[in-house]
Length: 398
Image 1: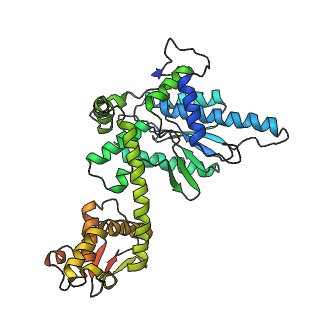
Image 2: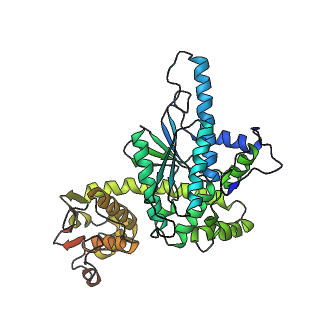
Image 3: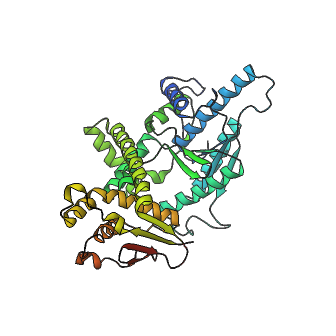
């Protein structure tokens, strides 16, 4: 094959002969992929593929699903002209590994040719640019490049779904990474099985409950090679360190740790959804969104709870402790609706904003709250008035 291709195990058959692991993957994809009118291939889908084992397995599984539907349609509806919706493969060549990156792209093209699937590729490199001469890019920037490429390609081909091959191991690694960085509730929810990429464009991750080794074992069973990225073995990268050192150590003591982490993420997502509904209600009751400004009516917040109506300060402290997560989530929703940048907003900023909202209901306000009314990241200014807080952005966010 091409470059550093991971070959099938020498003891495995090179022809297609589905056995235990591959059959379990077939069952998993049939269960997790949406089924409309008895068919899974009625919606045009773009599949992101790096050439690695996980995404190669996803392509093979979806290609089989599409082929099964096509065969069933040809049997039951022989006069139907359009058999299935398009299944399109997309590969983004970042060019970070020079010839190896080009070999990844060539491998994906060859795989698509074998499976008779259309393939769209995108090269990030400029003409005559080498891997050594390229400016360094962090993982967030690379993800954004892929995201924009997938989004544009999906829209050009009328796709409703973008399928990505995140596995249960990816979920566990992401959760651990977020946890040690001190993430908030959204980070503790990990990777979602479905998420919106744009209006009428949904990301689906049908392998999110499947272990990485199961995917590799299944590919070996059907004799399907894949590409290996040597940089994934370098443990000075935090993600690789978690993958190769930390998670195996945890699993030595807790063999079902990955499954437990996945369950925890699901529970956190359910909690986040409840918090989101409460935050929307809080926004409607206590705030209003204007032209590039957000007004929080502190007088509406100042209604004492029945249990503490005799002591406004005690009531406010109680409200602060119980409503803080709701106010933080509501503030994030307001930021998003106004299009204000929140990439530099830390949890400390959100907590400060929630504290100011509650502190403004006290008469007089606590002295330490007055010292925390400076500007927020992104040039957002706060004006603390008699019965409201007014947050403004000096110019519309781009």
